[in-house]
Length: 211
Image (cartoon, rainbow, N blue to C red; front, top):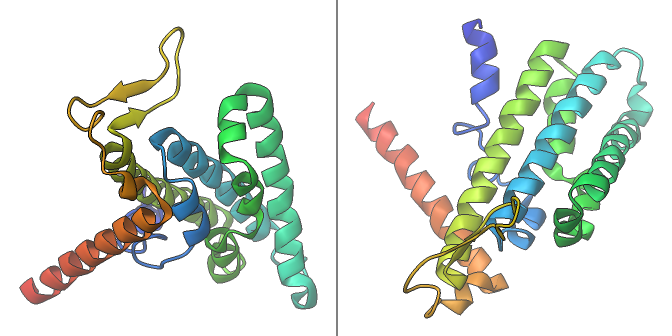
């Protein structure tokens, strides 16, 4: 893979992370980060929609008139969200129920619309696909980190996907019996998000000082 392609793939994971740097997609980030399984499910759904919508928008960028650019993007994104909802409803019903309305709200997720407007309609199909994958993985990583902290401290568990007879729940001794309830609440979501943002900003400033 060429350096330019590698850069497009990896920039969203750290340098331009949608959650911790660009600060987009806050609504689903704060709403579904109560369990790790929900965060992973939402994150992978965003990877699916973001990558495919980026590809199609890049493919049709010379066909879509500027006057209806944003509505056209929403139609394309909504089509892939509908496909995602149907697949989850059929094959992952428990995750579909857990995500609820936030799955449909991927249509107006600022990360997806932002990448369509800022990147996909100006770049090649390959670069747009790599941008979609990278930004989607960055969103998934950020969402999962927040969910892991909130669930571990807030309920003393780590909830993954159930396999076979296993319920998918890892219980952490000590925290499971004396959890910090506020971390699992709405206020806790904002608190964890703010502390993580402060940490990553501090890390970036330290790198700048070293240079």
